[in-house]
Amino acid sequence: MASLDRRGRVSNADIPRVLGWSSSTSLTIVERESVIVVRAPGQVRLIHECGYLYLPSRHRKAAGIRAGHRVLLAADLANRILLVYPPTALDRLLTGHFAMVIKEVR
Image (cartoon, rainbow, N blue to C red):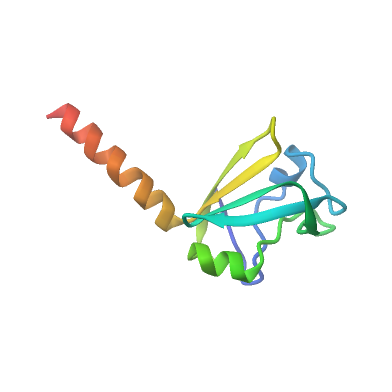
C-alpha cells in the first residue's frame, strides 16, 4: 500500500527499485478499468531522481485517484509490470469476493 501526494508521487520509493526501474527507465502507462498499469519499456520517464514513481494527472483522474488516497501496488517482477489499484477498484474487486465468502459461511 502507498499514498499519493498532490503532485502524483507514489510514497513507496522501493517499488521502482524492486522492478529494476530508475530515473533513466522509459515506461508505458495506461489506465484499464480504473487500474493504472505501468510497464517497461515505454516512451516516458516517470521515476524521479530520488526514486519516486510519478503518476500523471490524466491517469490519476481516469482512475479516480486523488491526493492522499491510499492505493494497492501489485508488481509482476518477471514482466516488470506494476498495477496501481485505487480504492474504487479494490471495492469493486472485493465486493464480489466478500459476497461469495459470506455465502459459503452461511
